[in-house]
Length: 245
Image (cartoon, rainbow, N blue to C red; front, side, top):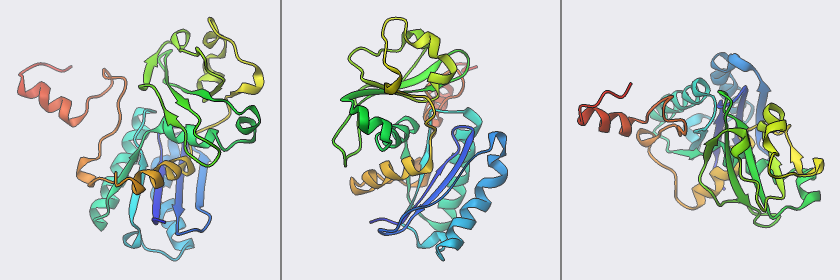
């Protein structure tokens, strides 16, 4: 098994996990609002010290790349860029919604309901949500994303043939999500929040598939294009002489 450090700061939670061989991961995970910038690096030092490991001894660093809070995603990306460059480690980018989906399938509520298809939907602010559809893939396997990641008004979420809904959008916009569809209360989990443990779950699979990348290729995942552009998009705009504001 790869030895991985996983980080996520894409929400109001700061989350750091360290996975070593077949041991249980070491986790620091707290709701900190705007405090992640102060806590992230000390927490990384803390989990490494607890395991008596150095950062350079690991195989890779996994990072939640969004979608999520703009400043939080940028904080995590910047931290990983510095850490990976200083140790020449590869990185494993993980989509935040995929990490939440992995966590959701492990809950007792999910297992009891045993859905075949489900949606992860999180609050995107500005009266919008990020969401994607998933298919369950067996008890011991990660779920499979079967749609593109969407940004929409809560009323425009597609819950057709969906058996379960998880994510922060439930608490933020519950009354607006079920105009055309309805789900029983036991098929809704609005308490789940992204954790570095979900980042780890997906990162292990991506590592096995050889999808680690050089840190120089690391980019945040922006779904709301008007908030920010990727480096490639900015270069394309500048090369065409177009004002991207």
